Length: 635
Ligand code: WT7
Image 1 (tube, rainbow, N blue to C red):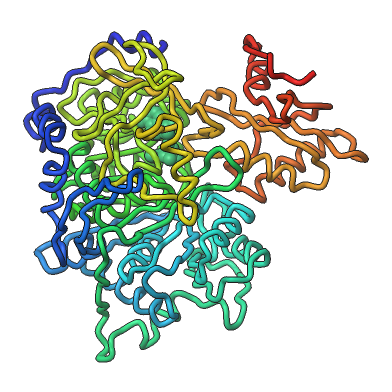
Image 2: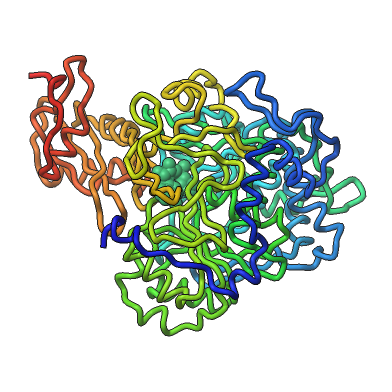
């Protein structure tokens, strides 16, 4: 079934869903926001504790450098932890965790706050101050959110690097952010194996000298090298008097932050080889993330919520760590692989912990789908009330399976379109929205999306074009760290005055958006965003490679798979062994997710006369499709 056929199917919310939904007047809210955007967001901001109220909701005077809740001061961590600890929620579970090996840990708001306070004191004692950058590179264990929150609490700016990245990706991100402190763990369990994170950190640090301290959480217990004077065990530090106040309390003052003070950097891939450090702030991000999570996932006090993403990506930042805590919800986190030891692991976890709201990615659904219905059918999934998906367009088959087999036809699926840059859901259903499988439906209230042609004119209904966002939103990125010019040129130049998403899309006659995919040099592999240029530079860093080009080709489970073409340097002979070595080299430098599916050794690459590789020609040739306009192709 294609998306076209999917277009005809509409799934209306059941009476039960409608009755219990927090929001049942989406159109009214959208109208309010259209009429007075500032007032709309101001109302939502009042849900939080501000040390100092804002003087202006939105300052557009230096656009596209928009500012939100100007003059206000708060700290997102105060709203995630401090205020809950002062309320009845103190003893409510904030986090339930299960390791791949079956270990279990739980944290009440009190316990989570205690760990965060103590670790914040440790960081302060190491000299970490407001505005300093700290790199976090860990597996999915509770200390990952603890480290993020501890940084934010004292005003430091965290930069989480996904634990599936490797040496060069980590090195580049540590160096660009100029972090003095790196927080990691010895290793983590994934698919029955140990990922040797500390070893990768050691190798990355050989390439950059700025890091003074490495804090290591013991997770797997495998032997690691600890460099005296640089590396410290987390548990040792937490046992020191510096982790407490002078009178021994496990408390730490939360730093007052300006609304616009940076909260975190998160690197994401773009058109050039250098990943972009997307910068988010305390005030607007907090308001945008909490409001969207509450309205879209309909998250209630008594819910148990599970987002299966990794905290190392924006999904995890917004909807594992900050969003659920802001709402005082109970969230579940799992360390390992979905099919370990058997393909029922996720379904067994949903049953075991009574998960009500489950959020995952199409690639994971497709991956688990191929093992058959018997695995989920062995489990009682009746606790589920609502499902979510993100990362890439969901194909109708996967949608149906998710809806019928996992949700038993009862749970609406929230297909949330957003980006690292947007910080929050932008085009998304709410429980009350009639669903069309494969469509992210409509813009969130206050969000104005459109589809433009080459010249910046809206296309006809149903036509494909460039997806743009026409009004600012509170959780929007503020800039690219240290590179404001690139911020302007990447997002605001293509169509002056509007934000260009890098995606193509269609809008149907009901105003529903259908995302098609990236139109830039970004490849979505299993929902992970990778830049062709980064993969190419990893290839070229191998002595045998003179030139390389990477493209994405359709893949049944991953959505897209990386295919690379390389020209060898003189003196190297093509061989299967060399191809395998190159694949492993990319895996070692970038991470296993970036390992090309296939590498082809070629004598030359199609280029323009000015020397730019024409990846679209490679892509067309590989798929046996028409090669399109070749007038710029060099002979
Ligand atoms: C790109 C952003 C934001 C969370 C994870 C990805 C694609 C994201 C959807 C969706 C179709 C989607 C877009 C977007 N994308 N969600 N529901 N339907 N496509 O964040 O790594 O910054 O990637 O993911 O292409 O631009 P990201």
